[in-house]
Amino acid sequence: MTKPASRLITLIMLLQRQPNQKAADLAAELDVSVRTLHRYFEMLDEMGIPIYSERGPYGGFSLVRGYKMPPLVLDPEEAVAVALGTGMVEELWGQLYRDPARGALAKLENVLPDEQRQEVAWARRSLIATGMHRSDLDALAPTLEKLRRAVREHRRANIHYRSSNNPHPEPRDIDPYALVHRWGWWYTIGYCHLRQEMRSFRVDRMDSVNLTAQVFQIPPEFDIQTYLAEEWKAQPQIRVRLRFTPQGAHIAQYNRAYWETMEEQPDGGILAAMVVPDLNWAASTVMAYGPWVTVLEPEPLRQMVAEWAQAIAQQYLTEG
Image (cartoon, rainbow, N blue to C red; front, side, top):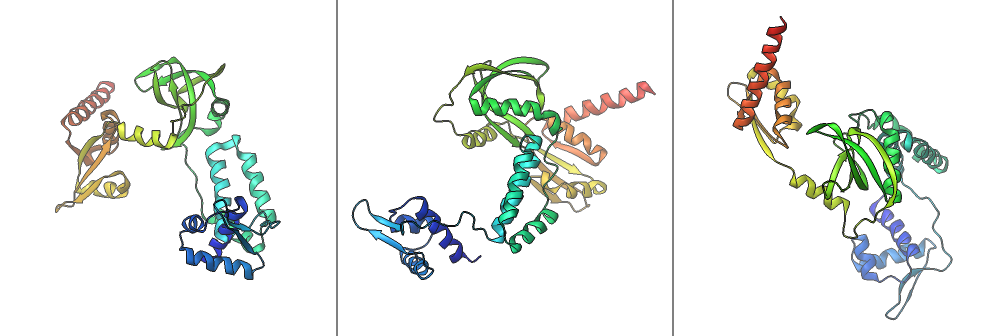
């Protein structure tokens, strides 16, 4: 669908949703000039969809009274976007939204013309998103369902949580504000009454979740997108520099997305840099590359990797 055609449909929807709109506001919404907007009005009139205007401070442009746009008008790309969206919902939420996602897709395909159905069928065969989870989604489903209810009903939850610093489950009372999927994990974002501040809790680290009868109110100034952006900025940022041997250069190149910078050396080796939240995570990553990589900095990471390597070697020597 061409841009003018797409904008005509958007214009009809805007006018159907709210009559008496100013030309300047409509033009800004469509990202066109007022002159172009009036040309669109003429095009709609030629299509049998007349627009009328009313003067005065409360006047503006409106659809002719009684006109209603057909309930579903999609071009092939839009149909694909909706179809792929239902697939993403099913992949992310599993059994919690599997039936609604499949039902929505069936209804969509039932009303689409042949061209759109063929495009959707091609997309479902060829544009695949999978492997988003690092944990067993079916095993998490009961916990996610409880947390979804807590978020929807604004109910406080009592959880037993295993943090990275404490392997033993610790009771927490939390007010869940949102469920967030990122980096392959499900998180609950909410207010922790133990810590008296906002926290992120990984769902797979919750041993139990029980909803209480107590309700809470989300502060009106809270915005989940702003919180997530600020939380990321607030995390510790440790810059790590590594040197891959010439024999291990292909490993660095294969994992190119990991590196903040990557520089090839005259001998065939590679200098790579990455930013990590903590040394334990960095050490685990470095150890996975074995003898093909050397930590250049920071010094505490060099010492940690050396200690881990010595401890591992000693363990195998002792067992032998």
